[in-house]
Length: 309
Image (cartoon, rainbow, N blue to C red; front, side, top):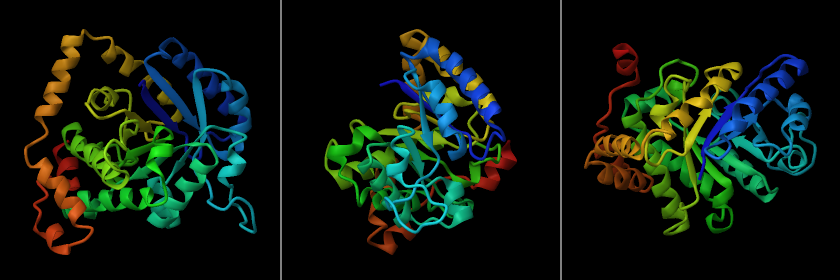
């Protein structure tokens, strides 16, 4: 499966001309690497038509940044997943900015994910903890609960090939302070564990799990080189800079297989033996507060990470 690089343009750019120029630049950068890297761009609703016309039938996919779970109705300003199905093939739900700025709940994210899958769209569900939750060692509990809720309305056997999760710690979004790869890896594995727990053994076989949070052309290879990381959701580096990130994963993938195995070995070594108990503790915390409070976090605070940089 090719590495997935997803570009969330957020509320950018300002004009249609800028959007089409950026789409063409992305297409030009992606075409030489289509066999190794899958590229999807997520412009604002207003530019879906213009951007879609440029990339339709090419190696670049296009998606929306949000959707609503009702198909039609009196929901002023909302755009349903069914409406998007004629314009794009992908949609993001549960992005951290939707959660923090617009008050989206885990239940609403679950409804959106189900509606989008029912409409035939490929879905990226975003999960991640706030800074205070990270500092309090609650990452596992929070992420596990978010994945459980998202999967509560989804049939993994029917939809996991069209479903992806993006772990994006909220304290890293737009801050310029990305989480360190060896700290990201256990959480990516936790996501897969929960999907298998909810959907049964093998439910996560075709699942893609991405990392997002201040990813740029300088650090993208440190994530896509991790075993278990299937790509990145990129927004903080800016839509124009995204074009430059496309080539970097390819450079890593072109390295001799021995070098790539060494990268995988180093990343695997970073997974300490406490990870298994960490995973069981996280899922158990959904049913017992005692297991959540008794589990040591083993992580540095977000403030410490920033200070160390």
